[in-house]
Length: 269
Length: 357
Image (cartoon, rainbow over all chains, first blue to last red; front, side, top):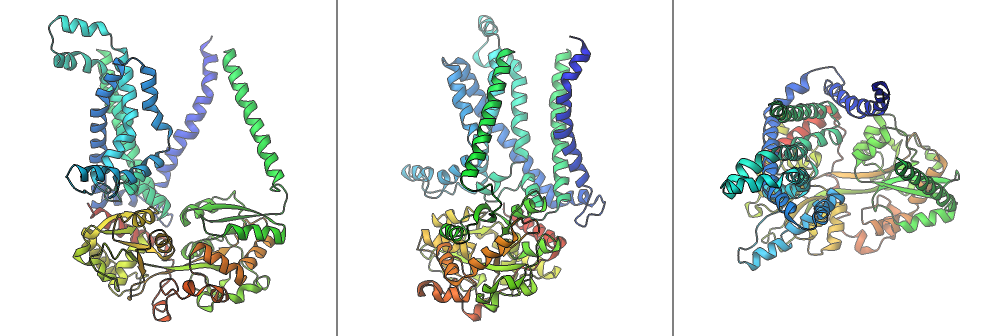
């Protein structure tokens, strides 16, 4: 097949990218330059660097970081165990299954589970710890978000672990490496690409979470996603909402470039 | 490759079959003819029996669609491409739709039953002379509380919410106008106040409330309060009625400093396809016995004075939902403060939320 014919096949893809990726981003950029009265201005960007939004940005990053770290802590051992099980496909299916259920439904379920009279508090009561407020705290927010993002962390790590050549492990053991050393010097470096894509798949959407902040955290956690939702739906200040979105897009692009850049350097070695 | 083509063909055939089936089903239910009326209303906001009755009387088939916030409804209608014949927005949304020229001016001669509406609910600030809207239901914003959980506290004033015994026990609605309005009212200002000094005072007062606030939530507030997740809530009267239906321990009060009175209204959008049918429907809903049946089903307060007379005493005499004149005189409608002021209200509300952690 000539390379020209190949180009023709790419046309739908380019069209798709232009219409549904590039055009919307340009539109957001365009909207971010208008204030409430439809005047062309940069004031939205000036507003963004006010203490309210800076504080919000910091808390968004902090929570996204926590969510990513805890997802990783749960997902890595889980993915490791998965590669050792007999019915891998079945277990994998069970992990993917919850992602078929609507996010809101899962979140609503947690309101019941974490509530004052919910099962978690009943268990705490029986254990003699007594009733605790779980709903509407930073803890519950991180917990539910981690629960939602775990499949996206497990999958890339799992495929990286699957690609790992088992003879390398035997070799490490033969050469007298302890379990920890094997993990640190052999397994982890070889699966770091999976960890990286998993972290990106979690960190980036976690930055802009919004429904969970209201349903689970009762607006005690405010993220940039909440601000965008408010500006588009309530204040109708599309300019400010777009500005926050532009900021998020820039940050996400930076994260991708940084993560991807290191990968490129390693491959080039 | 052959497999792929086969799979693709199978999907196409299935899609066409479903399309045909859908069209056939619509036809068999009478949806395809011109004699339909598309109503866009809040969820669970009409007695379905009345829709059947209307269909029987007029032969017009009603297509009923629902929304869950004024903003969602506005966005859909502003973008066009819809042909709703009748919509039920709240006061400030009507002011906005009027500004954007989305509404059809009403011909009052086609609405003889308008005379049943209590004059108190006519010609409100968002629509002088009811040129575009007909009142549907109304209500207030107030405090719902569970006497068993409030340590014997009862509520007469907004300022009772600041009591230190309510630590971490109050749920607020996630609405800038409602929460800011409450703070302004507690300082004896108008809830449409635009003075910067007063607004900053309200923010300061709200920040002082932070320790008592357990969460700021949306529609879930109904479920949370009915489940006794918190002792006190800031809610709309209609939600309060629903919560009290589920858990009769709770009680609702409109504080003495005054509060907000809101009204949902029937309007005909400019893009309506069946204007005559819409008039017929409005007239039908204004009929006292119909309005009474609807009010009994929905549980909100009816602005129809002749319907009120038909309602049983335990509903029409309930001062929580039909407050006496001394209280209604102090109630205010949310004025459309303009985009800029609304953004400022939201900014202050956001500051209060950020202060919360």
